[in-house]
Length: 227
Image (cartoon, rainbow, N blue to C red):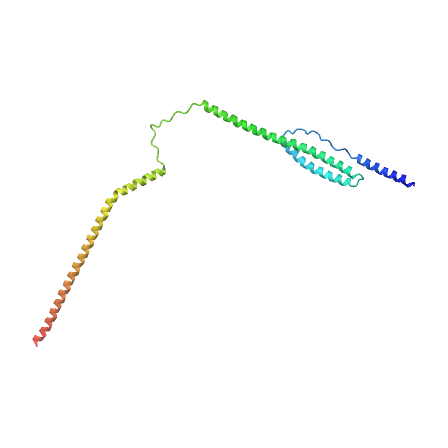
């Protein structure tokens, strides 16, 4: 019977120790206001630091989570660790949002300045052109005639050559016909001359043959007379 009060005392002591352990955990950090970013370099540095801090937050949460599983009130400890993680991530997200907003604002301002500069340059050019007198018309009375384009010049030379050849065509045809007639006449005379030469040669050969025949006949008659 005396064991029950002792057990109750031990249980109460364990609960008190667990509550003390949970109470000894530092309260989660509060989300503070973010200092304004003043330069692109600072914004880039903050974004890099946010990425590194997020990794550190996750690592610390993993360590606390492992510790919580060794405690009596596991759920309370895990809730506390998750709340710390959430608050820390929110703080880093606020820094990230502020840095990205600054970079976007700088880009918009640069674009606006470029547009304003281009607009001012355009207006200044318009004002300068409006202030200048219009150029005087160019005097073209004493200018040489324009040179024909290379393609047009080649075409003109080709057409002129074609007309010249067409004009010479009848003369060339007549000359060719005369040359042909002259050639035929020379050919006819050459053939006639060859015939005459052949005829004279044949006549000489016939006379020579007749003379030889008479000489042979005379030789044959002379021996018979001497006998």
